Image 1: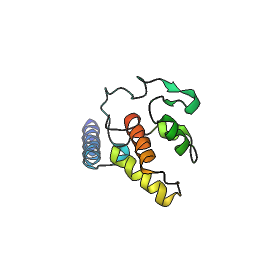
Image 2: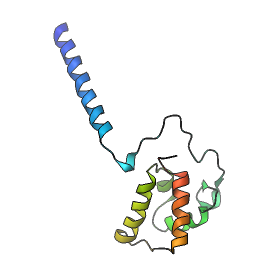
Image 3: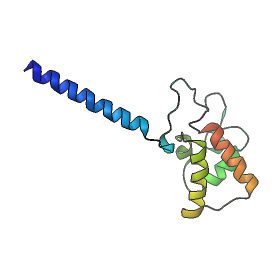
Image 4: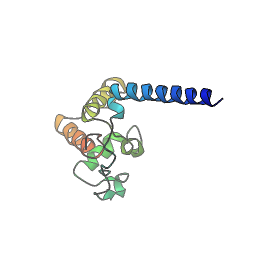
Length: 122
């Protein structure tokens, strides 16, 4: 009986190892890893209650009004995606979700804000 249990344990460990290896080799920009010790970007910045408790830095107002037209600020605050994925999502929302496109300057302000506070790269 002990021999079978040991073999089952070895098999389970091998399968877990394969799953970990496969996961490590698959790049998913929506789930980019953040360093475990990295502080949350919003903890060092005051939150603005007038704008859904988003970090109160340049771009908060523009970001708030552009994003809450379709979803809550909770969706924004839970994101930890790559900068490239923010750019992709902007284009996707305009092209496939009928998000109104802004002028280039406002787009840059909003994307800079989102990347500063809700990026997997910081």
